[in-house]
Image 1 (cartoon, rainbow, N blue to C red):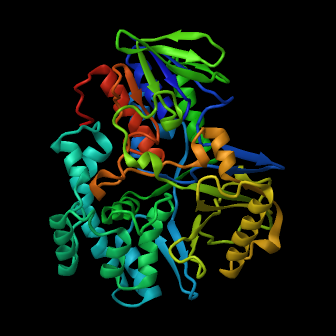
Image 2 (image 1 turned 90 degrees about the vertical axis):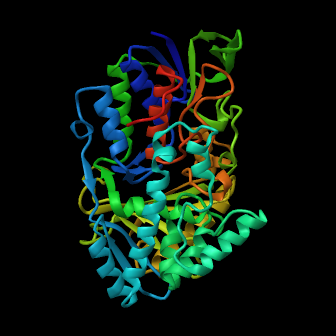
Image 3 (image 1 turned 60 degrees about the vertical axis):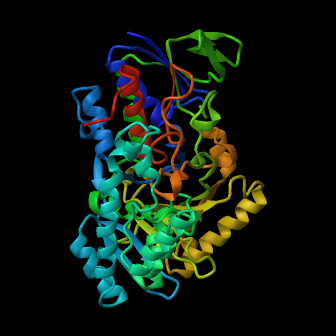
Length: 489
């Protein structure tokens, strides 16, 4: 048994804490704020409740594995997972609309053909087939293995040929670029134009990266795996809001005797004999430990480590507008709608409208959440935030959603709000790790240059999002148990 101290009660930190505690270690968590969950929070007012962080869950197997490995109860014994019937409804500036059925390739092909014309579905399916090749080539080193500076992992993830270009032109351009050493291969936007040959399909593909705060014009072509994962494994919602998942993980930690210390800011990591030896708290007190897990990414003491990678400086912030609406939720409303705006091509607005009685005072009301990636630190004053919120609400009206006429009140959340809750500079949201681009979209490895100090959470390998946070906890727990641990099997 070793003494483990975790900095930050975010999802990655708690995932590591639960796994280490069930392995028999003494684990404590120090969180600078008054609650757990990191960005997975909820805002409540007048009987309405809203997720202020992630609104949907992908790859739920990550959390199913976490709950199985840390106790006898399954994830579904603690939370109700609902597979949404429509992954997303895309509304385009030309008036066309595409509802994408959840986890049904055949139905997706038919829906695209019906909405965008014959052949659209097959082109989309062909792109997903090539994305599957990228997924199969990189899934294990990207999501299941610690990041190591060796050909078996880092080399695979850094290569720009992980996404197989479908057209000879794309392969020739990639080969020329690699021979000339002129930089990474095709971008997601480039392969979208070449392979899909419809600007609406191209915007659809780009939206997977954009929603994560990554510009498809700079994202590697292998970012198409984001579309493949959603199409193949489906999109899920947690009944009661995503905060319920954070509640369940916190309770699992408590059951495994993890000690939580809230409002306990950390000043730095203590070192002794060339390894991590505990924490120095902001109040001047010290905490002795054999292992330190920094769950706050770049904002955490020691959070960058020695294997710094470019993705820590990537990622956008978000502005989020919470809408309390009068009137019942219209039948057939999609959980998620993407509004593709003529004034901002390639930068769709996400509208979440969960069908969840727990989030509204009664069935005569509805909640909606508007979300848009923005530059870190933007909308810094109330006037700018309100002006942007007004523009986004107007965009939903122009798309025919009719939300303004039903508005009771709204709450605008800015990057500054996210910075206050998570500590991320400028309110940045960590992007997922992506293969290709010479490794520019990878995150710092979980082990650091200081023995005994490990990184967990969205700003470390394998990157942002709920699945990435959960997997980072699994990797840290494996490495603490065995420094030569090679990943899950």
